[in-house]
Amino acid sequence: MRKLVLLLALGFGTLLSHAQTASTKIGYADVDYIFSQLPEAKQIDTELKSTQTQLKNQIDTKYADFQKKLADYQANLNTMLDAVRQNTERELQQMQQNIEKLQQDAQTTIQAKQTQLMDPVYKKVGKGIEEVAKENGFSFILNQQIGGLDVILYGDEKMDISDLVLKKLGVTPKPITPTTEAK
Image (cartoon, rainbow, N blue to C red):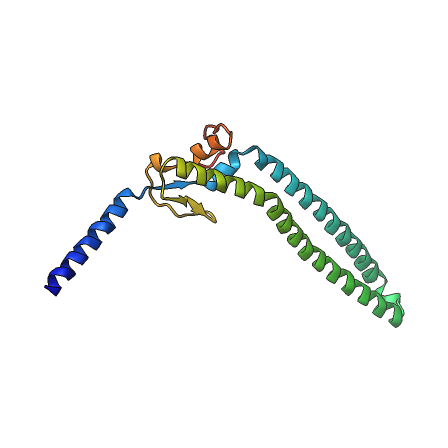
């Protein structure tokens, strides 16, 4: 009797598992493609490039000052008093350290700016994906790529909801051109 109950329980569990699997609808989206189609993408790119240019100009100016001071030092090294030489060497070391710190700070600033600009867009895209998934009965939506690596090695194109998400966000998908990465 126990064996019969155990077999029935296992059989019911297997049937339940199959029933759940059969009703599971899995789709995928290419978040990078969706983002590239949004009007905000160009604006964000422009702002990031502007910030990068400003920071690069600051670094270049500091580096040019350093190069000039170094050239002066090297040109006058033989005629300098020891105290002046030591002071100039300290200044050069300090300038070099300041340039390195400025480069590190620039990277941090760019990353913070990118996060600040991208977070609202990612939330918008995430909400669009969620709404499209619910409207179309998907249980799961996977990202087609993560960090440039394919996550979906094969997927039926009917399960790609990227264009549906764009339409939900009020964007008409543009046709893929040779410069646009394929979905």
